[in-house]
Length: 606
Image (cartoon, rainbow, N blue to C red; front, side, top):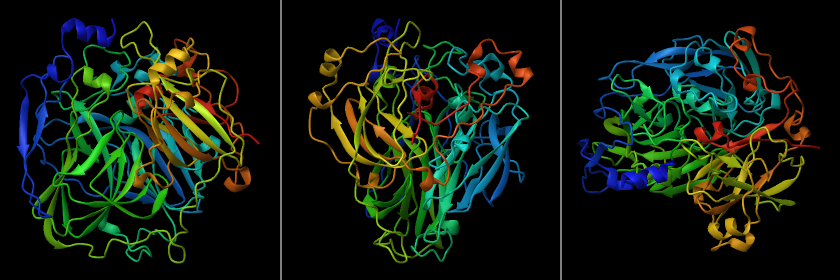
């Protein structure tokens, strides 16, 4: 019985499942001339969903994460304990440890400099997984041994890295083993992040805590108070790692969201009911009276958010995944999908008291069918009396001279490549199986763009959910999104059995004009939100070896499996074929979807 059939049998769905729950009402200062309004944080008592216990907001504060820098770094992935909320017990977590004060969750901000190679040596010190009972060993790449000896992979998301340093999902690092990654940093200043990418257990490892911010600086965007761009720096620049989670009564994180799916089975994605910033539940963040630069990451596993302030005040987007925009974009809200980063300027100089960072994006269809509602709150900014950064919002960011060159015009593609996003169904609970091009990860029919060419990728999403699509190695530009008559398309082009490539031409089924990207999406992107029932068009230039300083198609050795792991391997997922690895990956950044199995390989060929 699939979810929809079950819900019909129970006679419930969407808001109809909402029962009596607990709630806490919080307010904010009037600021910016807006009236004072309450925001209600509510946990819905719904038998089809697990719920966090009551957690009072603003009981803890967070500061800027610790920063590490240098051209040669070493870190370990370690087991840790972290208290997400002061009223609840510490929980088992994973963390990245750099040899200073051991973190309890996530990792510090890595600060690198353009054209200076960062060499990062990573050691796996992990023991039992916090979500050992939740690992689904039927997924490709997951194994029984991973419950007690989970492997890791580190991917520099947004980095132009050699294939053997990209964090290939099959390049597993097992317990007490090390790997050295080389990040050339031959890019303009940008906001990247590093996170786990191990085949079949990416969501479990990232949810447990294996993620952190990576800021690339250059001569324009130095991160220092004398920054030529006039942007806030030092204490007035702060990374915000945004997440949402579900917690148990004991304060432990829950990877599960619904009793509809049995323990140890893949769910397909879940909306959290509690918001986190830098590892703290609904924190209070003290700020001075002035301008701040926030480097925000949607580091959650599933949800798209519509971020805004509770008084609807204006803020500015100055950059996104791959660096700065031409000029700051004023707005009152931005939509942000998993994997995306946005560089924000927020002026607190006229805010009286405090203001909340909120979300009102409705959950995707399948989550809403179970009764999921939007997680409404991330944090409160409390404005003190101290004077902060008082410089103005810059009028331009890319104009040449003392600033970077303007963004180049959109290139003309030499080829159009159609790819598809779909949800074939299987005889399991849940029934959905996530697929790109209707293929499995191991299927050989992969994309092979030619180095030095520009391609237009038309991402055809026939599902009811948005899917953030991430391409490793490259940055791209968004052309826009165009609505589709998906029912007619699917009736005309019957989807074949899984494993047979399915990339139907969307042109005869367009349902409206091309909608341009939001102004803050105008810059360099590596992750794009492919909305439900649309074709999302992006322009990608695939760089040459000369431009990169390395061969993007160079094969590299598949790591061996330690005897202690091989002896406990119930099937061949851990090792795969005995061939070398080659190329990169593209995938949905809903981490459940990436794990099963909305991820494919691709190669950039000569």
